[in-house]
Length: 237
Ligand code: SF4
Ligand code: SF4
Ligand code: FES
Image (cartoon, rainbow, N blue to C red):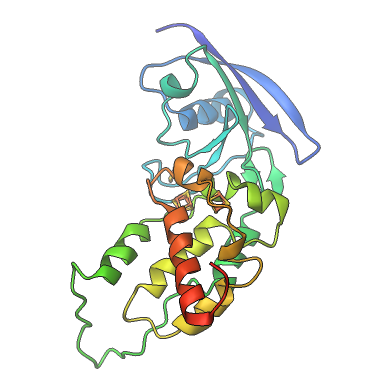
């Protein structure tokens, strides 16, 4: 395969512009391979982010031909049938430079949603036994594989409209922990996610679920939070 790809890449900050590069088309090439080729062979000043290259770390997400995607597991053949790629930083996050966004606000929202585990047992206690087929365990399992890539967050209209909205990833994380029977701060967490900028702001149209590369369903998690907050705190569902 000898043809070239025409690749437009965002350069600079928010007021930057697209720059076009020609990149050799290779078999089984990923979008991350294309970006790496540009940085190593054409323009060493290009900034982008990746670590694992195998879909585990969540750091390589970008906007590819208008949609947020993880790039290490996105094959060029699936997104650029006409030989053209347009690569931009993720939406809904400040641009640091080129394809790199500042994820601080994204992870601050995980903290606001009480997205860290807090148990009561010590290392002297026995391991907790959690029934694998229990309803809560199954609900926790359904959301636990989040890699924090930000694809859902960049795809969410409500985050675009109101920047204080906690967003699909933080709310999915909160629902996962609420269903972890070992965790001890569920009421505090539920109060944190039931406010105006929390689960009730979601319009349930499901862009997050459609785009999540791990096939998680933040929309379902958010619906769970809505039901539980209505039942427990008496707030609107
Ligand atoms: S379903 Fe809710 S969280 Fe998901 S993209 Fe839509 S508004 Fe955002
Ligand atoms: S829920 Fe999916 S899209 Fe959102 S951060 Fe987690 S893995 Fe990425
Ligand atoms: S580089 Fe780690 S998920 Fe893509």
